[in-house]
Image (cartoon, rainbow, N blue to C red; front, side, top):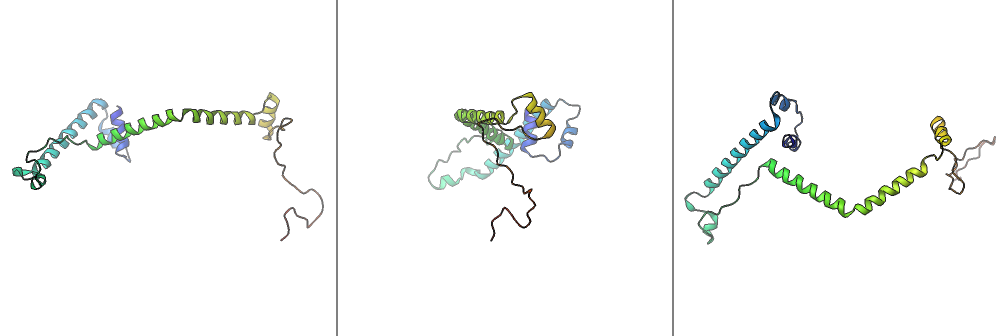
Length: 166
């Protein structure tokens, strides 16, 4: 089932409904494996046909420059889906190596974030209830920094402002 789902993602299928209806009532992993094997067979046939067409009669570009006149056995190229699978597997291995190499840093960052969240949480039931009912955080504990208070003018003086004059 995984190769089928991978192919949907790799081909960036905009609408999967037609694909799903084509496989309706069938064993998806088996049917997809058959289709992929058939596509691979056709791909290899086309590749061999095009390779033979380029070097008919023993005349090759490498033969002009003193290279071997015999045809070298080059490996069959990968299909698009095989290339994408290898790329995804390589990317996964690189990500895992990166995560393993930086595990200590990630653990420190997680711990710091958890500590910061714990500091922001009310430490008592009453503090939590007050925060839930009023939406106002409880007053800071003694010795902790108080957040800057908002400056509001409650005096009756008109024309005075907190911003500097220009």
